[in-house]
Image 1 (tube, rainbow, N blue to C red):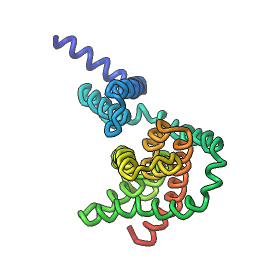
Image 2 (image 1 turned 60 degrees about the vertical axis):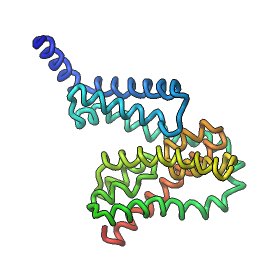
Image 3 (image 1 turned 90 degrees about the vertical axis):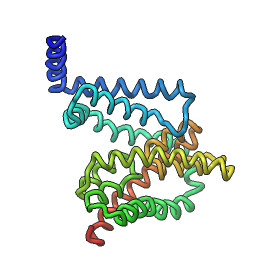
Image 4 (image 1 turned 180 degrees about the vertical axis):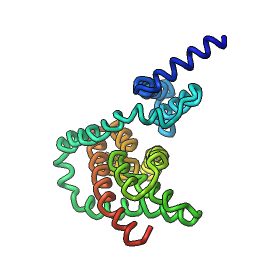
Amino acid sequence: MSELSARFQELLSLLSTSPALAIVLTFGAFFAGNRAFRLLKQPVWLPPILISAMLVSGMIAILTMDYAEYREGSQWLTVLLGPATVALGVPLYQQMHHIRALWRPILFTLPVAATMAAVYAVVIAASLGASEEVLASLAPKSVTAPIAIGITEQLGGSVSLMMGGLLITGMLATLFVDLIARWLSITDQRILGFALGLNGHALGTARAFEIGPTAGAFASLGMGLTGIFTALILPLAFRLTGL
């Protein structure tokens, strides 16, 4: 038994030196998470990405794999986030006639909402005595991952902590937008999509596409504009406030 365990550890050590193990774990958790989500009848409070994240965490713990090794092995998958975000321009183009008709409310709504998304997180964390690194990590929590990573690195925050905040924000935004929409009887896909993309980044956008193509297009718009606005304003705000 001890010989078998030693060989397993040797195999695991060999695999951890290449990206193969991290890639297999990531894709396996992704497909398993989506499958479990469908079997559970697609609960809004338990998105597939959360299930996948829990599966990856569990497997890393079981295999006693160092997280730094996993992150390094799966690094090239992170690069694909950029092209995936750019690809959301296709539904934007398809729904451009709806977007042109609503450019005024979008123009006035986005700066206020995107600013508040960063401000309330920083204010709450600062009131609880959080360090500057934590504040810099939480500020871009409502921005899509490719842009949020760049903002966090520029501000001197922790990318790992930011990614955790990103996951929690997307999950809660998706849940509460759905609940509030039902409470207020909001059925307009343009409003639902824009709110999901603005507050819930990629997770909210994925939920919006489940609602319909118009909701998905407006979620893509909200996510993209929030990312651009935050990338321009947040570093300047941190510099002016001395954070």
